[in-house]
Length: 537
Image (cartoon, rainbow, N blue to C red; front, side, top):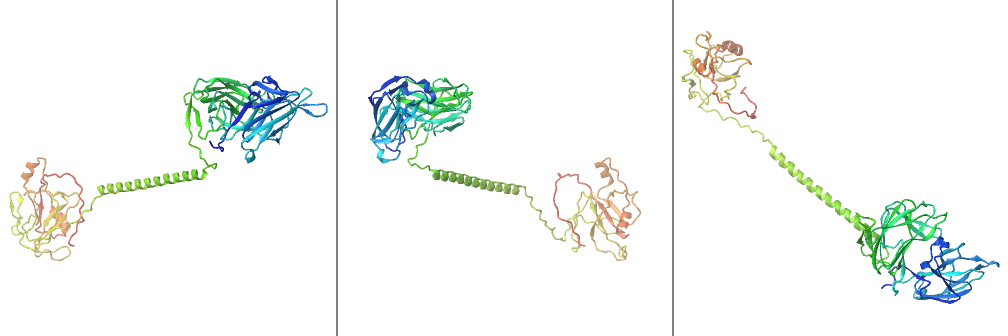
């Protein structure tokens, strides 16, 4: 066991055999309730002398306090009674200034050597006291701070409010300090809860009744080892000064083994304060890895839960740099992972957009020019012989395909059979025919596409209705054929010579007009993009 381990104060009562009293001493069994400004006496007894007496106490440690009831009186010669002196190993230590009035648990002698190597190991305290004129010198207890390697048999220890074995689980707990630099911790609001893990056979809660706070009655509960909550009451000071070392509750007859304690403030007036726990048969070593006692969610004031804290570092310095580095490194890793995830999502989105664009893109239509003209015509040829005024030879009701006698014909033009805005005009004018511009017309057997004006219709004239003009209009089918296919159809004669004269300036003598019959086939509607039409001119 290391001597550097942190330890708790050990409390020894005046009845303990480690005290050696010599001289004129008396024992009084009382709590000294008339001097309650500093609480009751420890275990209800004190040694006192009205004349003179000596005591000695052996211990191992570096700090020590001798406590008793301060009841100093002024004598007629101007001196104070009682008077006392304290020594450790023959070296005088300072005696505390007497309290102006009676007070229990008052420090009579104090040794605070701390790190002075001369005071390590075993020591002996000696006290010489004299009293007269009815004054009494009282000795109640001794507190000392042992080293970590001390050997102690079931001591009574103080678990102060700063001990790591205490968990302030719920509420706002705040520390207040008195003029003598002693302090306590308190909670104002109801529901404030703390937990404690300890080993011992008896435990006592010691707190203050501070001035300047509500002084009405309040209630709190404690639960030991997950048992049912037990209520206890307390109140504020009856006057304008603080009451110290007040006992709130005691739990005794415990087995000397580990226990848990949950305490919850119920309010509504005086705050709940804690100075220290006094534990008999306790552990004087402060645990480096204490159990944290927390209330359960269902019954916060009754059932504790334990959570082990991580092992405390053996170094006295806080690993602030390591903690900060770990936090910064973790943040950097998280940010980097988030950035990588963002890039991957962005790449997947681009791939998806490209795939969608590829599926909806319409390829442009590539124009393929028509094949060059050959000496065979792909369209029905019309005889241009005008000797008898008849049109070309026909077989049945359809024109025959005939070999083109002239290989120098113009390239064929595409005629849409269902477009009534175009007609095929064979225009072999006579040699003496002239156009409106005075120039001779082409005598070759040529073909031209002549558009109809909007609203014009090609009828099928009968022999009676045929106009007496040089132009002859012939249908590819007879009138009887039309009446058979469509009873409601009644062809009307149309004087196309007037339209032709208007269109070609009168140079349409001997022109032949052909009106093709609808085949009756209807193709499903489609939108087909075609290149623009061009003419030789």
